[in-house]
Image (cartoon, rainbow, N blue to C red):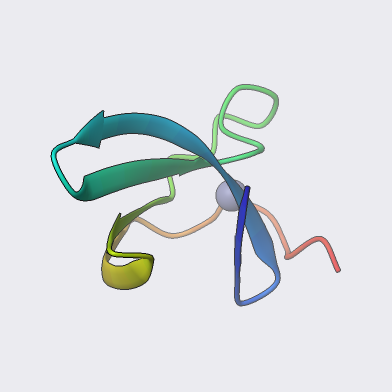
Length: 55
Ligand SMILES: [Zn+2]
């Protein structure tokens, strides 16, 4: 589990060092927000969330 700006992400796939994380609301709310990490550092964010953060 990864938390970024109040949003939670679940690990989706790993390609080498690069890990793709999808929003935990991906399936329930069809949220397309995705982040990529390399060595546990966020290197890229993709799409906006369709819901407020879950603090
Ligand atoms: Zn989301």
